[in-house]
Length: 342
Image (cartoon, rainbow, N blue to C red; front, side, top):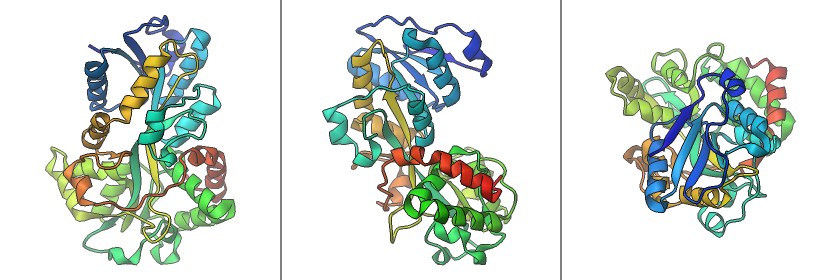
């Protein structure tokens, strides 16, 4: 059984007391998670079945959880914090949320790009930031890289969400690393000039913009597209059928990937259980749950995936260490502000 508490609003952080007892227990693990996917319940259940360790779960958004851990201080019962995107993991790192972990299992199972250099946090699932195109009105041979999204020939054809979106911040952070701040700013300025509309909505809305003819190209995480393909709504499935996917930069560094990740909380009362849980997340069992529950790419090679993911084959992924996406986040935000990307 999972004890589950959800923070409904930021005010809950200020008013709620400790959700779980902070004393160490050989058979308990307290997880603070900013992932809100029903499929993650299968992760916790599988961990408990394998180890006998019961999971206590507190859910909230990333900033809520960071502030709660800081407020709880040394009395925090939190053992593990889970969130999505390297930018958010970096923010937690900057606030002193995590402690370093040295694990032979994690070093063996996870690629170097998915491991923080000091073991403060790790990536356990991958999210490709893909380019989507109109199957009927656009030739995919016309574009093969993120850089080309800023080409003037695509003026008025690009749908992409706002600059306050962490996924876009991390994409730009990767361009800062690869091209320098000046090159990244030139790219961002070009994308702004090519936008079909002011940024609005989430990733799914960008894909729908392509299907509706509002734009020819869109940028979104791959799993939003797979969700449309698997939707119970025929209209959603029709959207997916009208749209094709491109994994950019296959002739160079590879497609930008971000992560769902986790780290052991500084002062974790159940540290041994926490490390054991991180190691479990790198197991084939957990990796298959990531790959089939939320259609994320596993970080461990050879794991069985959803047939749609399998059909895309082994495309090349950017091997940039994900910690760089966090380190470059402040510069990315400044660039967005300077070029007027709303």
